[in-house]
Image (tube, rainbow, N blue to C red; front, side):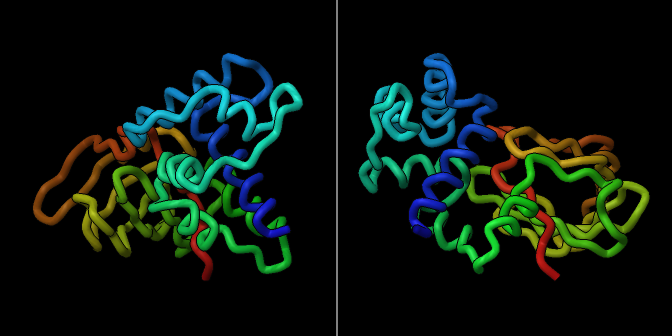
Length: 191
């Protein structure tokens, strides 16, 4: 049952990240281009259609295909995706964390947000109020712990524009993250 939940989560997140549904034949062309752009690997339109049970033909893709699909969302492989999306008996808790966007108006002072983008970049940021954030942790990115910036929202599948970034002794009026396919993870970090 849990494997089915992971497959459904992968389908949903791939649609969100590619910016399409799985209701029209053209959606699968968009998905195919998204996956190729993000991973430099080709997944066929018919493979995607079978994965989404489009036209009544259903099949679980090979593990290699699942790995590529998970990589297009910023994960190392499908196993990494599944580990990240473990359920604890409350399927709704994943839906809240995995919303398509986070707006600062919905955050509490001191609350942390985790952002991920390709290739393999990740940041944990703390909300300081007034649309201002401080970087708490940073992996494989130019942002560093202690950097501050302003932003109003973060949306899955879109770049994020950080205003008034202060990085060490330097400041930048505008800084963009997620240029290669947008943010692959936007979540409120557990406290």
